[in-house]
Figure 1 (tube, rainbow, N blue to C red):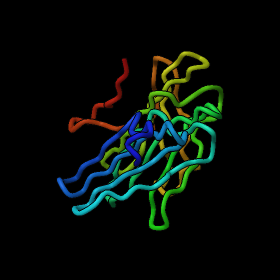
Figure 2: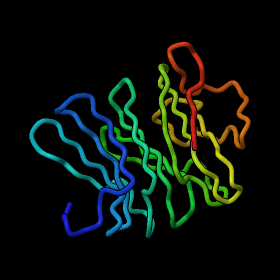
Figure 3: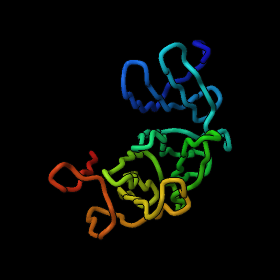
Figure 4: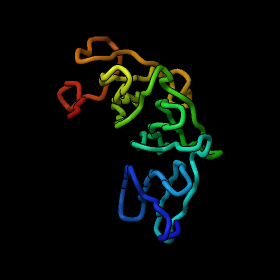
Length: 171
C-alpha cells in the first residue's frame, strides 16, 4: 500500500516458507481489513472487508490443512466479532458474535482436526470469551459462542497441545 497511508496495523502473519507468506492487517487510512501475500515473486494485496466505516482491527490469521485461510477480527463500527474465509472465489465474511461490544484482541487457533476456536474480549461485560466451530470451516454461520467468563468448561473442540491439553491464554 501507499507508504504515506497509515496501513499495517493489527497484523497477523502465517508463513509456510520464505516464498509463501500471508499477512492480515488493518488499513487505518481506509478503515478496512486488508490482506497481502508473497508467493515468491511479488506481493499481492486485497481488501477483505470494507463493509463498515471502521472494520478489521485485532486480526488473527490461521491456515488449515487444506491451505485455506481463516481470519477473525473486530468491526469497530458495529462492535462485532467477525470472521473471514479465503476460498477459491475470494474472501467471504460473516459475524460470529453480535452481542454488545465484542471481538477486541481476537486470537484464532485451529486444532489437528481443523476445528476453529477464537478467544476474544467482550468489552461490554468485561469478560474473555471463546467461540468454537461446530461444523465444516466453509460454514462460518455455524461458529457459535460456547463459553464466556473466567471458567471454560464444555465438550467442544479447542486447540490442544501434543498431550491433548487445551491451549488458550490471555493477559
